[in-house]
Every structure is written in C-alpha cells, then in structure tokens.
Image 1: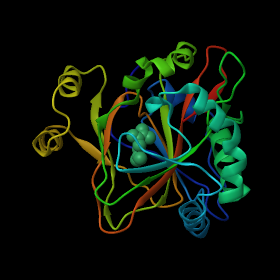
Image 2: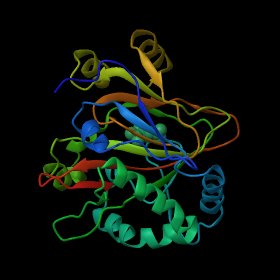
Image 3: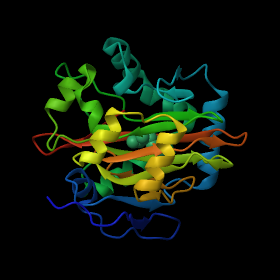
Length: 277
Ligand SMILES: O=C(O)CCC(=O)C(=O)O
C-alpha cells in the first residue's frame, strides 16, 4: 500500500451549522496507511471542553486518577500499553463509562462517539472485548503537567507488549491509530509533532534503538527529518496514523497543564472497528 506522499491532514468541520463532508472510509484509510490523518474541527464547543477540564480537575472522588507512566502527569482511566495488571484494568474499565458521564456529562462522550461513527462510515466504533467478553476502556483523559513531554515513538512498537497480545492478534492490519481531542492547550509547547519517518525506514529503526531522549538527540531529529506540528485546538478531534509515524509531544511550557482525551482504534479480522485505551 502506498504511503501518503506529504505530511498533511485533511479537514472536516463539525462546528455549529456545518454539515460534515463525506467521511466513509477515514478510519480504514488511516488504519491501512493510505491517509496520514484527519482533523475534525469543533467536535466539542470550547465551553464544553473547558467544563470537562474543570470537572476532571475538581471531582476526583468520582473518577480514578492514576499516575501516568510515560509523561509527567496523570490519566483518568488506564492505558493498556503501560498496564501491568489486566484484572485491575478491566475492573476499572467496567466502571469508567458511568463515572466519565457523571463527571464530564453525557454530551462529551456522545459527541466523540458520533464523530467516530461518522469517520467509520456509519458504523459505531465500540470498545474492543477480550475472549471473556470484558470491554476495554473506551476513552481516557490525560493531564500533562508543565514541564511534561512525550518522547518520540510510534504506536506499533507497543503491539508487542504482553498485555496487548490478545488484542493485537485480532487486528488486521496490525495497527493502532490514535484519536485525540485537546481539551485545554498549554500557554506554549505541548505540541504533537509528527515526523516524515515511518516504522519501516532504516533511519527510524536506528533512532528508536538509540538515544531518543537527550536534548541533542531531539534537536538532531528536528534538524534532519521534516515534521508537521499538528494544527489542532481545544475541542478539535484528530485521527492520525500514530501506528507507523514517529511522533512526540514537545515540552509543556507555562503554568497551564495540557489536557487531552483520546483512544486508539483498530480493525478486527471480521471487519469491526474497535477502540481501546
Ligand atoms: O498526547 C498526544 O498528543 C498524543 C499522544 C500519543 O502519543 C498518541 O495518541 O499517539
């Protein structure tokens, strides 16, 4: 399958009074590596996004906030890629949707679900289930603190970890694309930066097995490889081929945290589009 030739996202608009354009195969195209990604504008009105941040920040008695393992901050819900105890994960997943709606209000989840169904060609994108029928978490909310960042990676690296084995075995293609919605952007930095570097490139393998952490290695990556700083604001939804493209989040600057909400999407062998986080 031919890779997209340019670092560019298509745009759709879900803002007030806008009819979304045709999107029959966006998720399939991104999953199959034919399209880099799509930005959907205005999925959450700004006030709804701001209200969700205030609610998550202030009502932790009702929803579990867990320390994040790979950035400075916390996650409401759990992330399968860094999970060490699957029983705990599924237990929390079973209670999360109700707790999420109690804190954020049902409209937030309903809007995300509607856009994902649209991008899936009208088919709802339900949480994946394990062999025992337990649903994976459908969404998580992440707060990245000032000074936080995420190092360069691509999501297919994570498909080999043991806690993903059962799910990964069912995915066709073997890919997980990212869906995320900024809820609050920081004063500066905290930018999702996507590189013209795919998992199969020799340079990508060299970089991933070496130093991907030091300021010098990050500066060299920025100097040597073309990149795109994703053009998204609070309330927009981005779907992108995080599976194959190296990406990172630059350091959050200023006093304001970076809040996002997201999940991963894949396709099972039978054709169903499924999500998890
Ligand atoms: O927080 C982000 O901007 C992206 C996180 C990430 O690496 C992903 O969703 O693939």
